[in-house]
Amino acid sequence: MQELNRITVKANTYTERIIQFGEGNFLRAFANWMIHEMNKKANFDAGVVAIQPINQGLIKMLNDQDGLYTLYLNGIKNGEAISEHQVIDCIQRGINPYENFADYLANANNPDVRFVISNTTEAGICYNENDKLEDAPQSSFPGKLTALLYKRFQIFGGASDKGLIVIPCELIDRNGDNLKKIILQYADDWNLGSGFVQWINEDNIFCNTLVDRIVPGYPRDKMDAITKELGYKDNLVVEGEQFHLWVIEGPASVKEEFPSEICGLNVVFTDNMEPYRTRKVRILNGAHTTLVPVGYLYGIDRVRESLEDEVVGKFLKDALFNNICPTLDLPEEELNQFSADVLDRFRNPYLEHELMSISLNSVSKYKTRVLPSVLEFIKRKKALPNNLLFSLAALITFYKGDRNGTEINLKDDTKVLDFFNKVWKNNDVNEVAKKTLSNTDFWGTDLTKIDGFETAIIIYLEEIQNKGMQTALNEFVN
Image (cartoon, rainbow, N blue to C red; front, side, top):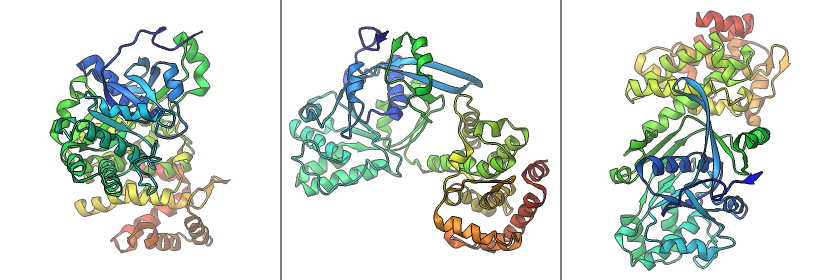
């Protein structure tokens, strides 16, 4: 069986214009796929130099394959379940700075480099007070990037046109702002001078981003069939869903240099990403959290099966379109389309997402993902969002720890589990509702003070306790 490389598979060579910190599954299934599409369809001519951000990684394996790998995109596309694959060829080479620091730093000399992309996990954008300029390499990702930027500043004499556009993908709020703040901290620690600080502030662009694509990663259990289908051996096959979204907050000039729009990619350039972050948290994450206790107590184990069930599926759609979307400020058409995309993602036949895997820390998830929709709905509509309240009653029942006589393996903070264990002892739904809703440690506010809230929860709790979830939900939905 042939190995995947640039001899066995025809691939393009591109100008090295992007330095990428991270070579893992997500970047290869997300950012690198988009760069590949822009290279093919918009003559972007952007080659990627992948940097291994930590001591252990995949760079050797990537170099053994000449930067090539096969990407499978599986999911709902234009209403149909589709699995498609292609070889991604935008990565030109990889560098392990722990073995070849000089090669890493030499990227600063390249006048063609324009972008920095990163995904070094949520813990990657962090300040390490022990990092020094003379380290080879620095331990932190921001430390390595600061050293590279300072070298570039020196080589090109602080030329304004040699600044870089930095687009981090780490899943932290205001990722670009945080990264820039740490770089400026290192500039101060290392006495890099006011000129360098001015160059960072005026000639480099740090974007804040929101990224969204489910990437299951390397399909280990399918590799025999995949290898047979491909006709070559690929140690870096990666799977992702069809849906993708990249929200990039930055100046309009970034959009002009990043030709995603003409390729039909779902990349949104904006000067304020907060509405998009709120949309994702409320609709995508909120729908998951709303669904879990209802679907699980109904007797369903997976997200896809929940959508396929007539009753549970209708409950979730009503929650999305009638309770959550009306609380958001983006255009209705845009919200409806995003919601429809979310439902398609939940139906993805290639992904089996267990409801119990989403149930971890459900109380705090309800507070951050669903409760803001509840409170905003009440504020705007002067009414209660019944589906979201029914879900809360189901959540409270879920923490009773019983599913039709079978113990539920609850996973949450010990204080949360102890609270529900104690409050459910007498099996008095009035007491359960009052103590749970008034627990400000859970919700940040006393929900019993909202007119009609406690009464609604008691009614739903009684229905679920007395009739069981299946009957209670059927009656609620109908």
